[in-house]
Length: 427
Image (tube, rainbow, N blue to C red; front, top):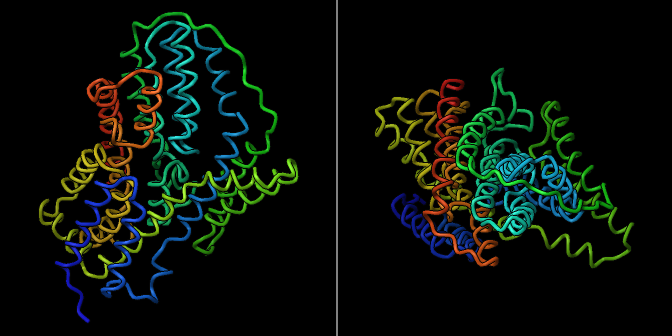
């Protein structure tokens, strides 16, 4: 039967409104919408399995599990302790914590990073009798910034890797040119210069505190193993599409086996398995089916044609629209469904502009805008919401403008640098 594009658009808009209005039920909204599309014939039952990007799902699940073991080992806290010992005053303690926050966020979840480092910032603030609000905001925005730096840095990066066929090394050097990792680092330098200015008056000395003890280094080797094996896999020609996902899940299983042998306790295994964010996995599964359905209805092609018409076919204008619209949208909505929706649009748009098979300029512009844009507001990213929640528990109510005094200039500094670098390198 002929698929109705207007109906598909209406259903998609209802889905997106549901995702925004019911954040605690987003996975169920996405799955329910996917079921409606399937019933109406937009997604053939025979295509359901192949429409879901299992490589992305497996990578996220495996990485989440390994990160849970890594955090439990206390290694991130120990590394943070070493950094604080080297800081001469509050200004440099915050700067070093923000840089470290970005560094580990390039490999583990942004929310986990905030949960690890926020208590350290709070401890320093209590000792010096100062507010921990600016320091925790700085840690939060830095963790979001580096999510686009590597293949495993954020869900949006994994989505991009799946769509563009990019491996771990491709985020460093791709087709003979520098790639997202170094572009994000340039943005980080610009944003850190702003932090140096913002905290210029915080020159109180910082005293060292007790050093965290790490009794198990195996999770650290597992996390390093993920990086090493993903790099090695990038050299395998014609490998199965789920290779990266199988690597992450396999190493997580190794970690579970190791901990069972060590502790002889199944309750620990169950606790670790429960740490995986199944809600996000279900959300992504539903979104893959929804996006596949509206693609079948011709919505993605129509949207790409509308963008091309709006810009008059000028690639620079299209690129500019993509980056800054993504920044604005991601300041208020979760960037996972946004990026998942827009990646197929970028592919179709690139094909219409003669960039078929390689619209990397559009892909990278989307990721820069969507990932970094979440730092504009306290509701733009999960890490920001988490940091505000931590501060609330400590008795600090953070107003939107208080957050934006750091988030806005920090974001603009990083995005402007990334915006120009991506264009001049990948135009």
